[in-house]
Image (cartoon, rainbow, N blue to C red; front, side):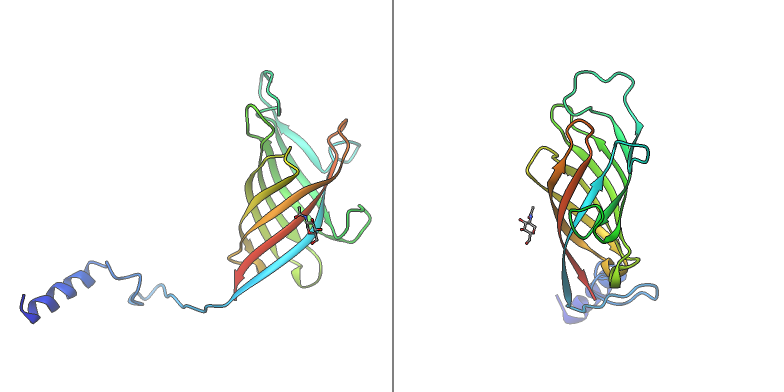
Length: 186
Ligand SMILES: *[C@@H]1O[C@H](CO)[C@@H](O)[C@H](O)[C@H]1NC(C)=O
């Protein structure tokens, strides 16, 4: 091919938009490579209270017929669970986990967690992250996915390792320790 022809083909290629991702050639969007990543680690406790007159987790839906499924397949809970610095419920309140979890596995205990962890303490006040993950609740340590966030957690990606600190098997009330690792960009 002659050189002018190669140039022409290249220009046609550009015109089709095939290279738009690498060229800042639109007026309504731009890409900047900042290269700087921040890793945040956290440790806190999640208080899930089903019993008593003021439960923080309430059942909002259940299947019409609850066949003999191990984990109560189909039950859906709405929660507003306090997050504290230590395992004691009276230790410093640092935020709330708000959202839902539901029993999503037929032959085992598998909870689908759709929760916003919003913080109220220090520089993390008004920052939150969103967790969307299956929780294999009978495993000693459950790894769950963090998919995004707001404030200091904008563009978050990460994971939580959850381990039950205390549980009352008769009511289901539980205190769960969380170790969280989040990557964000500045
Ligand atoms: C969470 O972190 C603490 C302190 O580093 C550690 O002792 C504990 O084993 C961790 N738990 C999990 C489930 O990773």
